[in-house]
Every structure is written in C-alpha cells, then in structure tokens.
Image (tube, rainbow, N blue to C red; front, top):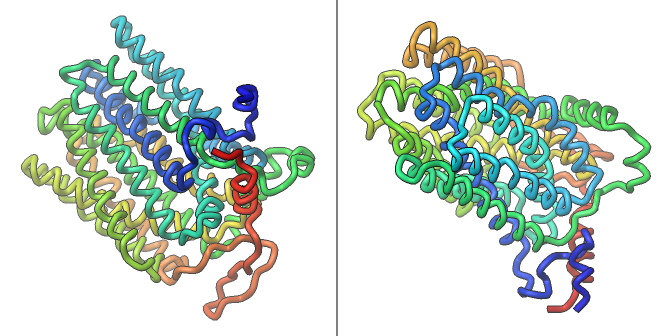
Length: 460
C-alpha cells in the first residue's frame, strides 16, 4: 500500500480502510457531527459569560456580538475562496483549524484560567473560522445531490435536519455543564469535530467549476462584487436576502442574548434550563424538517417562508408574558418548528436559483443575510435590556418585525415565489410565465467532477 497517497489532497482518505458508502450519507454525518460540536459550545459559551462569570446584559450582548462579528466581513471572501478551490480539501483544512480553539478553551477551563478576555478571543476565532466553513459546506451540497440523483429541495431539508439534529446532541452534552464543568465538554466538542473531519475525507473531491487560471486572473474583490450583483439582479434571490437580513437583526438578538438572560434572571436557571430551551427550539426544527423530507416538495415556497416567520413572531411575543417554564419550552418548540420551515424554504430558493460558477458566493451572501445582522442585534438588545429590562426588551424587535414583514410583502415578489428545479447555469435565462427570469438547464461542473472522481477511486 502506498501510504503517501493519503497525503494527496485529491485522494479520498480512508478508502483503503472502509468501503465507500453513499456519499450523501457521509455528507450528512459530517454535517451533523460538525453542528453537534457547535451546538455544545453554543450553550456553553453564553453559560460561561452569563452564569459562571455573572456578567451584565451589555457584556453578554457584546460577547455574543463578537462571536458573529467576523461573519459580515469574511463570509463573502469565504464564498469567493470556495468557488476557486476544491471544496472537500477546503472543509478538511477548516475543520482541522476549529480543533485549536476547542482544545484551547478546554485547557483554559481545566487550569481555572477563565476570563472575559479569553472568551472574547475564543469567540472571535470561532467567528473567523465559521465565516469560511459555511459557504464551502453549503456549496458542496447541490453538486453532491445532483450526482447522487437527489431532489435538491429534499437534500436541503435533510441537511437542515442533520444540522439541527447534531445541535440537539450538542445541547444534550451541554446540559451537563453544571455538574461536569466545561473542560471535558470542550474535549467532547473536539471529538465531534474529528468525526466531521473523517466524514468529509470520505467524500469525493469537488474541484472548482472554473480553472485555477481563470480564478487567479481576478481578485477576490471583483469576484465578491460579481456575486453581489448576481444576487441583486436575481428576482428570486434578492427578496429572500432582504427578508433574512432584517430578521437576523431582529430574531437573532433575541435568541442569542434575551433567552440566556431570560433563563438566568426570570426563571433562575443555569446550563440545564438553557440547554432545554435550545433543545426545544432545535426539536421543533427537527420535527418540521423531517416532515418536509417525507412529503412532496412545497410548491409555494415564498409564502410558506413568510407565514412561518409570522408564527415565530407570535411565539416570541408570548415569551414576553413570562409563561410557566413548561410553556416556555413549548413556545421554543413552536418557534423552532417555524424557523425550520423558513430556513428550508429560503435555502431551497437560493440554491436552486444560483449558477454553479457563482453558487458558493451567492450562498455566502445568503449566509451573510441569515447571520450577518446578529452582531448588530446582539449588541443593541444588550443595551435595550439594560435600559428597560429583559421582558420589555422583546417588544422592540417585535415592532421591527411587523415593519419588515409588511415591507417585504408589499414591495417584493417573495410571497409569489414558487418552487423551481435547480438552475445549473446563469449564462442563459428565459422568461417564465409570471415574468421571473429562470435560468436554463446545463451540466453542473462540480457534479461531473464528483462522478469522475467516483469512477476513478481506487478499488476497496
């Protein structure tokens, strides 16, 4: 056996040791494992800030803001990078780097060196890495689904289920933080990332859709600008981007700052209660995504997305009433269920409309809209809580959601957007009956690359 071949980035690692399974299954295993680690630290981080260090609302909001702050600045660069490199190799490198802050925080906690500044450094490093992981991870799915003969809407729905199912596993571990401490849990998070790295190594290479010569001739900034223009000119993508950008400011601030402080200050809870509330949310996501995966794809994707955001608004409003704790978890379940529908619909709309040569960049813009408002929302809601209290602070983003929803309904075609098949190329466009521009069909270069790699993989 030539062990040196394992070091080749185009060589599928471990193919000598285990038979190659369905690549879609490996993708979902890697996705779930990655988000299991992310879910664990998503509970542990605010618990360390709000409960262990007992910091005020402004400090919690600032810390949560910094965990997302690199995203608006780097996710578009991450998308441009993903469009010009092998996606499998990119993901493996990034997942390896995530192990560094995971194990670093574990050592800090083990030696009792925890401080606010250490958590800030951890948050910033995770934000930087996440900005590059997200576009590469999502851009790998459409070509993989096409090569495996999967419907893209269902593939996206399953990816959403794997994402939040993994987070549920992470939450279950994080609920033990009060008894185990944070250090062993961060080692568990690192082990989950190791599993994600192994699963990614089982995928076939996904070379870029364009040649390296073409990619090297143009700057990152020009490619980012091209992606922004493509998203802006696409009548299916831009309304989704607009809705997500506004809702990320309004919903994410509540989720990342209000909920941990609600658990601490109103319900007197700790890591267990915070994990239960997060688990209820993700459980709702799982229920709806599994339901969507078992039924025929939804045709009226735009209005389904908007109606589900209305349900999230109602659940958040009822939390303002400080209901009994079991009802709080039920509201988290409802909110998560609506969020799962909304995310599945928005991702399906954007991924089906994006051309392969621009897909990672447009997906990175989608992710920027989905998460890019979180730093602003987290910082603002921290100051609002300090001024008027955690319960009354919920009313401020609720008023903003009413304005956002009404504006999108009356000023954009999002309500009228319907399902269409994935568009492999943006070079040719034909008018649809409703006046929307719909890209014509052409081969997907990344899907072809997967099929070629599978055909030339070494025997097992």
